[in-house]
Length: 84
Image (cartoon, rainbow, N blue to C red; front, side, top):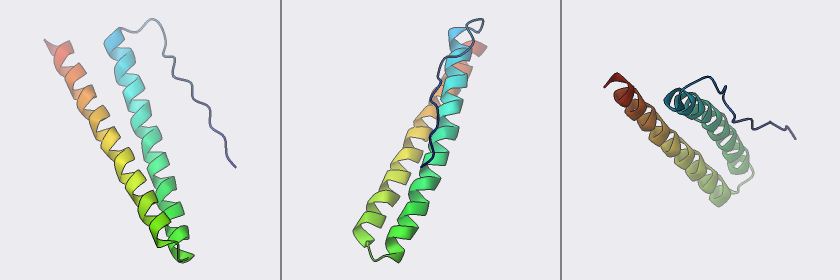
């Protein structure tokens, strides 16, 4: 089992907008890794005739990427605010 550390504290010399954008970008990358992992396990489940489990894992991957889409939109909003 692999472990990963969740360090979400960003350098304090950045503005709130910069911190948020960096944090959101980190979460997007992190979610992508999780979605890939869910999909890999879905394939394994399907190979073992666990079709419902595979379907649920695929759904979880899709939902994870939907969350990332929200994060991307939040980054766009931050960029708009900082350009004002």
